[in-house]
Length: 254
Image (cartoon, rainbow, N blue to C red; front, side):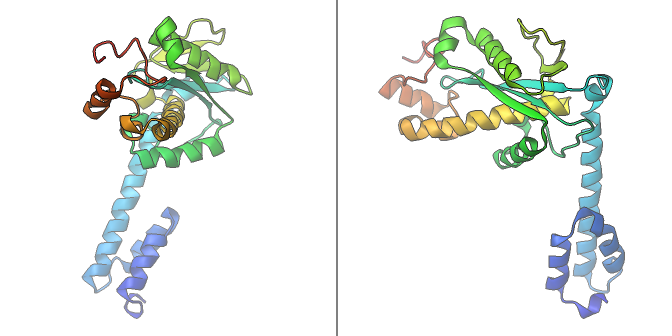
């Protein structure tokens, strides 16, 4: 059967195949007389092996979700943007369905921008509830970055419907929240729910900084997202601060 199809046709078949179709294709073409076809089958085997590794990794990210499985609504909480010189800090809060296994969720910093955008859409489609909160630059200057982060987290959690039964937080315990909390060091890489919150916060903030780039194009916000890159600092020294700069963060540069 393999000889009746061209290499191009077989390659397109493998490329378009769902994962559950690959074993049949591997059996069908794995002993083909053409080396190129056999190589396609070998590549498909590697694709399946990588998928199994990813599924195992996702299972390892469900340890806390299983541990607190008696809770109906488990919420992950994380933030993005504590370190930049400009822009808000953004908190994400996400409740995923029981047994949710969205592949490739991870600490948002470990993912490419394209992958974060892709996962953002999947999370928004599958989440039972999802919300963000903001700590403005003015608020950061007024009460400091940690307290502004806590406020953003409280805002995000407070918006959730249904309300969460427990919070899994990346490293912190949020003051002023009545819901039970579990702080997890490097939780965005250890919990699928916190990882989802990390992605929501990061994508939301990055999109906002791209909008600010259109308003203040001299500072390169689309690329540096407000962090202190050399070009950003140079622009800050040349043009001075914008309304979205954190005055408490930029004293060494102006």
